[in-house]
Length: 280
Image (cartoon, rainbow, N blue to C red; front, top):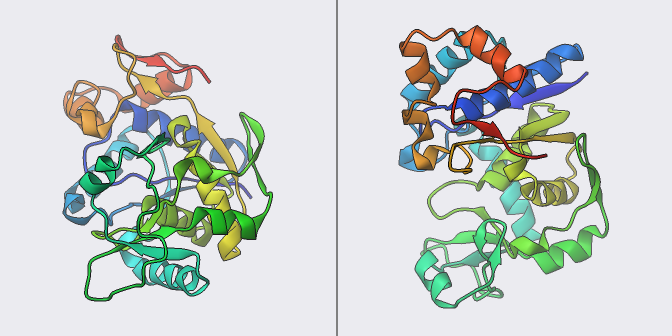
C-alpha cells in the first residue's frame, strides 16, 4: 500500500507552495488506494509554535483534504538519540564546535545547502562539557555503503552520492537532530513508501538514502514535484514571509476564499496572478 505524508514545521504560516505539496501527496495516496499522513516537525527550538500546528490542521481541512495524523517529532527524541549514538559508536560521527562565522571565515566552497564544512574538527574527541554538533564523516560513510541508488517517480534512478554536502550535521547544538536524521527516521517509523516533497529537496535525498543504508531502514521511492514561484521567480518560502502575504493559506481562509476550489485549481495548475510553476 502506498503511504505519503505532508510534514510541515510550525515555525511560520503555510502558503500556497505548502498547499500544492499537500494536495499532491494527498492525491497520490488517494488515487492508489493508500494512506496520506500528517506529521508535525516541531523540534526547531523556540521557533516551533504549537498554535501553528492547530492552524495547519484548519488549513488542510479548508482545502478539503483528509489525513491520518502520526506522532509529532517532539515525541520521538529517543529514536534520534539512539540512531546518533549508534553512528557515533561506529566512528561515523564526530563532534564539531565550530560556529557559522568561524566556518565562513575559512572561505569554504559552496554546496547544495550553503557553505560546505571543511572538516576542521575531524578527529576531535567528544567533550561532554562543550556544546557540540555531530557531523557525519562523509568519506568514511561512502566507503562503508558503496554504490547504492534511489528511485524518483519523475526522474528515475539516481546513484546516491551526497559528498557535495560535505560532512553534514546530524545532531545540532540547538536541537536533538537535524532535518536529515529526523525526517529519515520518521519516514521509516511511519511506513512512508513514497516521500513526496518539493524538488528543492531533491539533493537532500542523497543524504537520506545513505542514512537508510547505514541504519538498515526501509527504502521508499521519492516524488519531487515542481515548486510554486512568485512573480520574481523565487520559490515561496516561510523565511521570505510567503505565509504572511497574500499567498498565505490562513490569510486566504480568513478572507473567505473557497479552499476546495483552490485545491482543485492547484490540481489543474491554475495559479493566482503572480504565481507560476517551476520547470520539472
